[in-house]
Picture 1: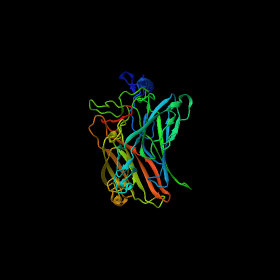
Picture 2 (picture 1 turned 90 degrees about the horizontal axis):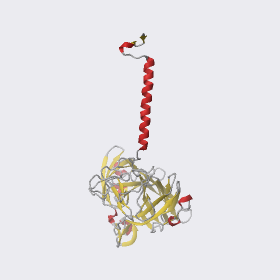
Picture 3 (picture 1 turned 90 degrees about the vertical axis):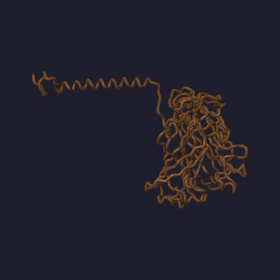
Length: 426
């Protein structure tokens, strides 16, 4: 018998035979893939997570909390921060532990006076101490109970109340305190925990998302308002089985060295590189006659909230690589031991010399550029040197300033080195 491909005796296969074999092979491969998918689904859910501002997480950070109820920094204007916190879980109650960090500087010659730079002190220096009470400190904490899908909001300057919602309402957890002072620059951190008792550990869950809105309202009429918003930065948990964590701290990544506090990661590691696309300072305004300026806000990832003083966070050196539109590269560095808010053109110059900065449009010769931010890592076993941040653009206007706030891009996690967050009760 002849076939299209020659004699059957020489081992050739007809077109019909090949089609049947192909169908059999395809069915077998599909079955194997389906079985593998079922087996993978049965394994414990462990994910390689990344820090992000557009995803839910179990530990979130608001790196910019600004309160100026008396108009000290902005005469004639009241500043406050409104928080929005949402439990995105579809079932079950979630207990969330939140705590404020006060990073307000004060004048050495007037310890009760808050300051941003020495110019606010009338000749005195502006630093991280206010008399005998050190700044950069955890000030107060609170717990809230949230139902599945529940969203709440409150004011940093005035506090708030958690409204009753289905089966998770807790009258004992309904009052949210204010940050505590009339003038504050700081942070807010929130984490999902097992219960509301002091010492309750975080749990493996990624249900939280948050947004913050900073408003500046001019006194009197017409009461001009400047508003800027950003998303909270989330550190997702590695596992999502709702089990309590047992590391004794929030471990943002893992430290490979034996004997380290965080040999196993509980949450995503801090970013190794932060990318910021921005205008160079003094660039001409696009929608207003005033020039454009950029503030960079950096917050350390490692914090021990049991310490009242500068030891709350390690001293960290941060390096900058700046590229202009001609792809020319410049570099600078600075240091921080707490949250720090700085105008770009004052990072490498003294106040008043900002036009000579490498972040100035007069030096760069282009309107925009890109800055890559790298923390310098240390060898400690109980802390790291990662940072997170935000960018704030602003321009002078007849009513004060016009501003916007933006989250930054994170490229890769720090490898082999953990950042450590100890909660107030740990």
